[in-house]
Image (tube, rainbow, N blue to C red; front, side, top):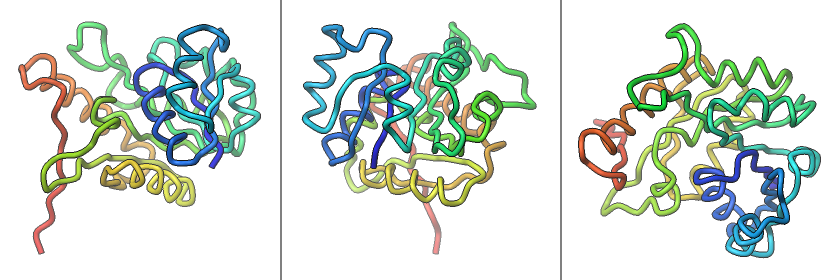
Length: 211
C-alpha cells in the first residue's frame, strides 16, 4: 500500500516506521522535509520511506494518516488540497491542554469535523485510543491490545482492519463515524489513567468475549 503521513510526530512517526518496515511505501510529510529530524525518521523507517511535502504525501499515496495536533488539523487539511476518494485515517484527539476534557461540544467529534473538512475522503477514525508506545510494541503476555475504529465506508474500514492487524493489535469495528464521539472520550480515559491516575503509559485495553 502507498501511505502518506500528515503529522510526522510521535504517532505518525511510529506508525509510518512500522508500516514502511512491513513493506508499504510511506511518505512522511513535513514543511521541512530535508531537516535533520525528518531525515533521521526516514533512515529509521528504512528504504520504503521518504520525506516530502504534504502535497507529495497526498499525490503519491492512496491512504493518508492524519496525526496532527488538534489545533493544527483544519489548516493541515486545507494545505493538503483535494482529498476526494482518498482513505483518510483520522488519529487526532481534541484534548484540552490540561487533559481535563475534550475541546469539542458533545454532539460532534474530531472525526466528524475531519470528514467535513476533507470533503469526499473516506474517513476512518483509528489509532487514537492508545499511546504511540503501544503502537510501537503491542506485546503483552497472552493478550492483544484492542484498537477501536469507526467510519462509514465498508471498504475503507476493511483496509484499516488490515493495517491494524499487521501491527499486532486487535481491530474492533465500533460503527459509523459518529462513534468517533465515543472513541475520543475513550482516548481521554487512556490519557487520564496514564498521566493522572499514575498507571503510566505501558497500559492498554483488551476486548473479552464470553462464548
